[in-house]
Image (cartoon, rainbow, N blue to C red):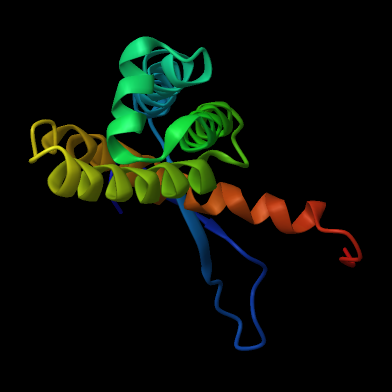
Length: 154
């Protein structure tokens, strides 16, 4: 058994053996570090990335005009980034938000390569790494979303 994970088991099956349901971070330091990473990324996406787009900062306007996406594209990307930032702060949504922001970063990488000659292409790739870590470690937290689905029986 690893020091960083501890099994959480389901009820014994018909064969009498228990099956691991999931592994959760065991150490308090690991939980705090992961939460700090989520908060840092949420602040980055909310303030440094989404806000300039949502307030139509001249640099954001210029970039989206260069792409030919105009203000509609700028506001859409800004809203998606803001939604992802908020999602990173809500435990049940954190893995979904991390995967969604990763997909957005793949698009940002491709856009940087094709439209801006790769000038800042490394930035989205670097951001995918901590997002993938959050998505992986918090993947079991998304199971709570099924409880929120309408018409689902408990």
